[in-house]
Image (cartoon, rainbow, N blue to C red):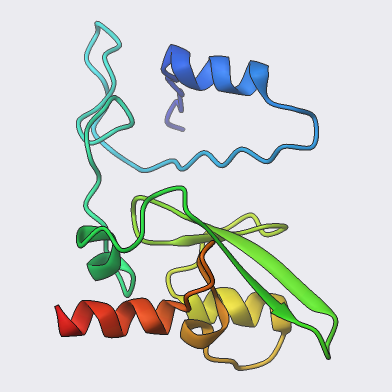
Length: 141
């Protein structure tokens, strides 16, 4: 059986120590080549190097219409549902209360609502714009 080791930058550990008890901190792990004997972080890790976004949100991230760490939200008043999701550098959504990141806005919305729904029109940025509006803006640029 292989050995699994985790190397965290000191800034990550400091953030964990400073976090409030009710605060949620998301840590994304990815498979990479083993670090060298000097324990430097692998290429493409959180040591200041960027990760190329993939999937449906990639264009929005690459054009700066979304940023890693942006919090999206939605409310369905009639159904009494609301949720938040955090955008990752990889172009995924981490939905509050779910452990696995979602690869598309609709998959993230379905996880919350339990029924098929268009996540592009449901999720909103902090300024109230839908992901669909951002996608339209991207296509027009």
